[in-house]
Image (cartoon, rainbow, N blue to C red; front, side, top):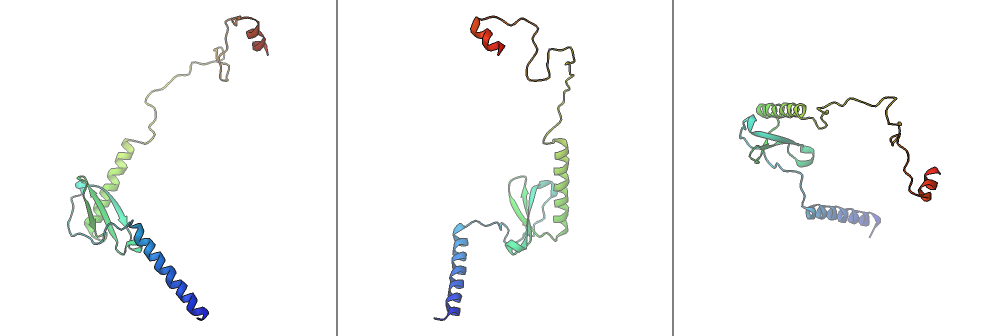
Length: 143
């Protein structure tokens, strides 16, 4: 066999192995194989996902309804564009109404001043005498 034949055979074997591996995994990101002609009311749409033809061979918008059903629609249709805008606006309003890290609704006044018992580190100054618990405590306390 010539070098070209062996190279061609190896390339063919690699392509076949890659195709079999993809089929075994069984995971497909392409949820829409065709689009529906059904028009949804925008109030019934909970969310959507965009599917690109580069990966799935068909451009589609996958709508999830408030009842949990999924409908694939043509992204070029006018009602689909309006429905996507409606969902985006509704999510933006919800995000403003319920921010992820809301500011505290209460305020605290700082009562610490120069005359306070706080020494600026992680402990309080004590004005009370240190209790005496025997010579061991006193010797470790002084060091």
